[in-house]
Length: 284
Image (cartoon, rainbow, N blue to C red; front, side, top):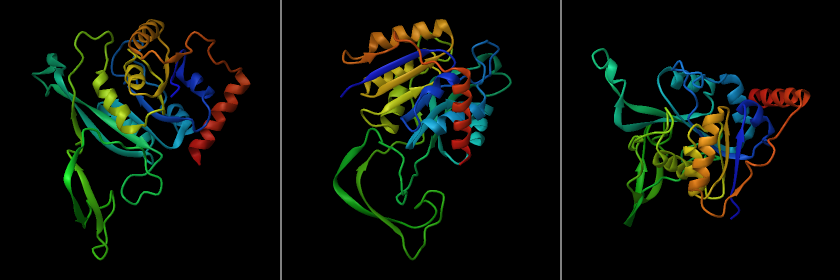
């Protein structure tokens, strides 16, 4: 399997315009929340981000992102037709201790799951989902379900209950526990174990994973270790250098890197055309 890693320094909105339509299997990212006063923590324009995501995702491709607070709500409303469900990352350490006398300390972040594919037993084009940590049953069980829990977001017909065979147990739950990063090299660095779980759950070996805001490079480390190809983008020069060094140091030996190659460039006319095309695809 030929794995590649493309690590690009620049504005992700311009760089994503160079990615072919329908070529990315999974976007796994931790976008700037816009919650801090730091210059790098500036929220990206939702309309342009989601127009690009819609264009470059494959027909059953997914977007999985860590979010919090109002940032969660904004993304849910930016792509309500693609939104599938939310998860919770339960941290091992709390944040905002200085506000403990005024509000509960934060011990979690949201994880939002979006996809062009469907979910449920009757989905015509199911999204990629590989539940981790399953335990095979020694004796599979025939199961039957009637009611709202039988089909996602719709009521089952009591006359025609959903039937299936349960072959495994220990299915993942909506709250996932992963230890917070000790001695982080980036203010908002996420644990590799969390993004390893995301990558393995929502993509397949050999797939293409994109993180358009590299930060510390966690997604790249996880994606390459899991046997996926990776595209990473970062605007901040210091973050970019740190992420590239970290990803290269941890990558398996069979990875082909092209971050030393010239970055993709578009003249202004091509960029305008690309953006209009992305807006058109988002509207249809």
